Image 1 (tube, helix red, strand yellow):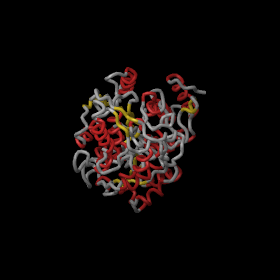
Image 2: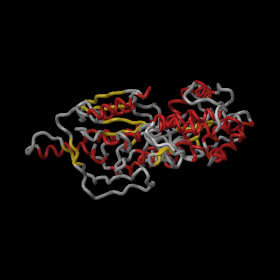
Image 3: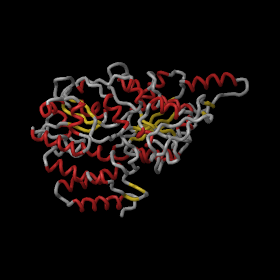
Image 4: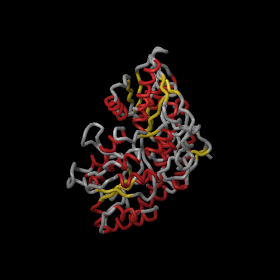
Length: 475
């Protein structure tokens, strides 16, 4: 770690002048603020301004880490193993997001401050905006104030712009980045593609299902003629619709229904009326069943990032090797529209007394594109030794030098599809209330497609749900 080595050398040089050593000065140029969430995808520009001093309180030897899973804490264990000179105790607090328990507890801990306050904390895509740009953004430290050379490392690592946009504060400072790439692809059955179109080649299938929803529904009709559904339920297209919209749910403090999101009413109804899906809901037994051919009709595909393949589909495919269930009968191609789904952003407390140490951890997790950085281990399935789960990561540089071939995908290198997928996803259409508003919207869409409400009534009831429960102007 360059900055820790710099710290040790600096301490040796000034030992005769001071007692203790708690200040670190990065030897790289400092980072100017990154672009605001409404910016374009042009690369950050470096600056010649000197880096700010980053201080560790020599009396503090505990780093408080808050997360909603054990994923990041386990990464930090690996970081410590690689850096035995990193003499900090890691105190971990893990609270699941189930029943909405994580955010209130994290908010209280951040507001209370003191020795027990989080130094490093995590936020997932459903609520990251609250912590990077919204009601709790005042607690987040700028990455450059942690001693991280943001401009240089973002460029070297080739970080997808949507992750930068989401992790950028209203002041234009980068305060959060992720380690996973969650750009979405279309994950489809090879055998069904061959039956309908005579090929399972991803280059051909992407042109059958897109670009655009018109081609997708034309493909759905061809699949239906063979007795197949193109997706399991309308939730399978929702994340593609939601995250390809031009505008977020709230614009200038008012509820706004982007035309692409409003069109989900019609897309969902078209799926249901034509029998193009099995009318399942995501994260239910019926949805999982369609991944292993246990549904009412065979399902051609699912929309999702690599984590959907690794942590959901593989375990629900009915097998563990090619030839068992649907395992090995899948492939990925570019989706009809660019989107992302999910992800975890890593932030630091601006009042942390060990910013330099926290900065070293965060840089290793989010911006180190070397073969000893977290993302290289993560991409190649070697975080805990050989043979682990390969995953897409935030760094395009890392994925370009990694092997993304999966037996589940018939040996296809998934990085060939997921790297460009991350580049045309957008992160400028999110709000801190997305988790709640999305639930209201999808419930009303299902009421409409089931024939229980008119289109107009579904929209009106959705607006009423928002007006009754959130501090948002509804017109």
